[in-house]
Amino acid sequence: MGSVGAKEVPVLLSPEGLRIDGRQLNELRPIRIQVGALHNADGSAFVEWGANKVMAAVYGPREVHPRHLQQNNKAVIQCKYNMAAFAVDERKRPGLDRRSQEISKVIGEAFESVVFAEEYPRTSIDIYIEVLQANAGTRCAGLVAASMALADAGIPMVDLLPAVAVGKIAGKIALDLKKEEDNFGDADLPMALVPQSGRLVLLQMEGHMTEDELSQSLELGVQGCREIYEKMKQALRERYATGPIGGSA
Amino acid sequence: MSDEVSAEILTTHILDLAAEGKRLDGRGPNEYRPITVEPGFVTTADGSALVRIGNTAVLSGIKLEPGKPFADTPNAGVLTTNAELIPLSNAIFEPGPPQPGAIEVSRVVDRAIRAAETIDLARLCVTPGEKSWVCYVDIHCLDHTGNLIDAALMAAVSALCHATVPAKRFEVAEADYPLAVNHIPIECTFVRLGDAIVVDPTFDEERAAQGRITVATDEVGRVVAMQKGLVGAFSPDDVKDVVRRAFRHGERHRVLVKGGTP
Image (cartoon, rainbow over all chains, first blue to last red; front, side, top):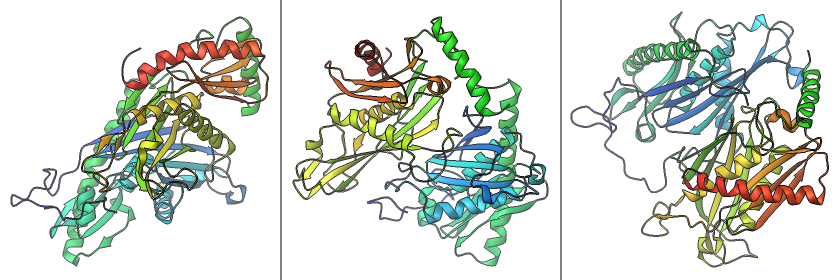
């Protein structure tokens, strides 16, 4: 965390209550979702969220690798979150680290909660999330991208999964932290919502918040998720309004 | 129908077409798919480029960090190239340590960059024997629909052409400066389909191929690297032919890499 040389704590909130990029506390960064961005995957999506760039692909339902993970009554959902070496300021060593493995696990479990896996026994639904450029909130951007990719692959689900992180900067609760806010803020709380039920299927937290701040954060996060949900539905309609994107190889 | 059976039928069809001088997507034997180069795709990298050849998409990012020169080359910086053929890009790739295919792409690209003296490694030396820049070229394959090698090298070289040495950030110098690029190698890959040798193979053509050959050329008329791959054979005349064709394609693609229109 933290870029080389950037040691001074920036002013995270102006006297007028604006954040370093001029946003209000309850304002999201701009989000652009492109469904069907890849050609080989059964479903895919590219999400640009602030300065994050995340690609997701879904393969399956298909044969299970490794075989012993196969389940006779439902599909197994395997999620791999990975970050490109050049996605952050200091080069990240390629390959799986503990952080990626944990994120893969919680995202996979979030999707297991909404996918009708029992429809596809003895198969695997493989979700790949590649972070190409990172600027805080990559697991949420990855979740949104993967959610769109699953929908694009035609996998039946209870609902799409919008996700966002809420944090605390300069003592105030703020929606959708960017990198500087994440590095120098007091708390980070990523979450993913099932809009149908209003329940959260991913929730993590790091930092410190009072009980009041926490409930305020949850409300702000759910509101943010609902805003993202509208963008997700819109992106899906755009994908299928004009017929398939792309042509032959 | 199983994948193997449909691939077999497709292979037969591709070979039948090739015998008549035709290709599945209507291209001529010496015709590339459309190419686009998008430098600066990733702003966290010190240089980057997204290259598309048809539906194949490869992203390369450059990172420069201060490090130590190798003991046997105390006056030179260090260059490392790494290609990630990730499962997102095609069902044939599995997660885990690099497979032979990924290692081949890394090495063929690395060889072209090194042999062409693309970057002047001597200028990446800060203090001989003690401190030099390490230049990481990371290649990420996003969409694999054939001909990864050509796309990977174009992405890597375009990223290098647009790279900045982060000297200020690492407190090595007062200001950042552009990475000096000497020569621009371009790789050109062909496959044999029966008697025909076609350029820029698609994924299905690679699967049908009876041999693959890659030729890297630079702008001063040198062949800087070659690689024959897959099962199959090429006569010396075949090789001369593809080298001649590689120079012509190279000239056009070099303009794209530098950021112009061919």
